[in-house]
Image (cartoon, rainbow, N blue to C red; front, side, top):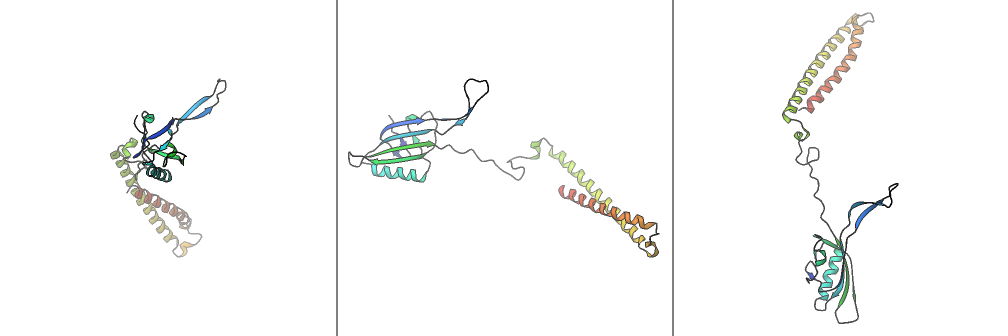
Length: 220
């Protein structure tokens, strides 16, 4: 029978090996159902429990290696017949204990509990567009060429809106200038009420220019 190994350490005098697989269930009670529904959340990590002896000729060296691995919590490779069908790539040492028994000099008894340490799934790739690697406008079902034409139309309309707003502002300034000349600024000046209303129109013109500028900035 092949000797169980942890990395390069041969466990030649293993006396007991147990493999455990536990499922992670959530129990759901359904009205009118005899019994309890068990909803699986997937299995937990495979575990292996070993008990054996470290033989005198290599006991001191093997003990030191096992203690180091247990202390650092580093992943290890475990091979044994009992895990052949489980497809385990890496494990960690959950617990390790050792004791010197009365008997042959240099012989050390140990107990090891190993747990499967599966690899993490690959991280999601990110990019500047939408946080998804390789993702573009075309993936949304839009034709990038057609979308470019729409953006050009918006840009042209924004330019026309800005020109119209500028012309309206110029007319308002001229009307306000006429209303302020001499006696024309009096309460009886027929241009004065129009000039007062034009001031409000001027504020709208400023707002339109701001909107148009924002559209042009968004479309490049």
